[in-house]
Amino acid sequence: MTTKEPLTPNFTLANYVQFFAAGGLCATVTHGGLTPVDVVKTRLQLEPAGSRQTMVSMAKNIVTTEGPTGLLTGFGPTAVGYLIQGGAKFCGYEFFKKKGVELAGSRENAQKYRQAIYLGGAAAAEVIATTLLTPLEAARIRMVSERGYAKGLVSALTKMAGEEGLAGFYAGYAPILCKQVPYSVAQFAVNESCHEVVAKNISKDTLKRWGKAGEVSVQLGCGIIAGTAAAILSHPADTLLSKINKGGGGKGSAMSKFFRLAKETGPVGIWAGLGTRILMTSFLVSGQFVIYAQIKQAVGAPPGIEIHPDTKTE
Image (cartoon, rainbow, N blue to C red):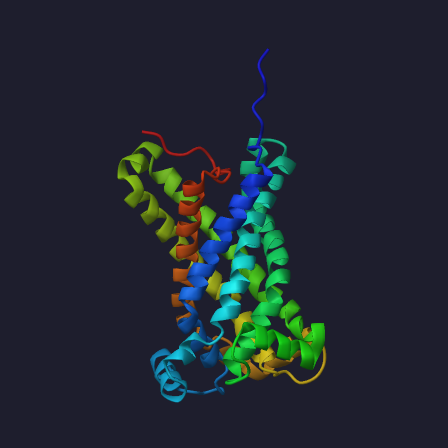
């Protein structure tokens, strides 16, 4: 009597710990390393409409007025926040993707509805990750947008808690979901689609012959495309979130501020800093996928579940 092969691998608790650790490290390394770019991007978003500041001129202005360390403003919240957020997002995506395949009931159905599995898994994982990230992200943006607000993460969190309470940390929760969910949906779904294109056109034997260099090149290329898509889809909400965390939008709920600022910013201003963000995000996402995959291999974690159609054979 033959035993039916399970539809998905049996990931253990230890495997999910590995996924969380790899996701947290890849997000911390990339976001922490690109803190200067993020500082410049955030400042550009907070410039008045019609400002002629560029990425280079803004960077020079920050160094001139605040010194080189000004470009590292918010590094603490960034590193800690994305250690938690990255771990929850990557681990969550592995979990919800597995559940989506199981819910489909068969490999054929999973392949047929794979885009829904990618989108649903990424969205569900990001909601959890964003809930954990929001207080630290609020502290980071406050430190970047208000010069001299606090000297570090602990003092920023303490000051915000004393002045605004828990509500202050989650003032931008709904808007940050509007930013992070499209970001992650594009990050994972577009990356999956890019890998599917590679699988259809290059056989596994060919990829093996290319070795580690070929493996990393594919991960980087797919990640750059996914990062560009993530930046474009999430940029309007990112701009508005920066303004909300600086105290803009007047009174009312976070979403009322969100829509009020959208109207004030206008269809042109809402895209301020997009070029800088595409540059930053393409490096972030591609770097994350490479680091995540390599850490998983190093610690012996199982590979992710592949549900795209059969690959090219020689």
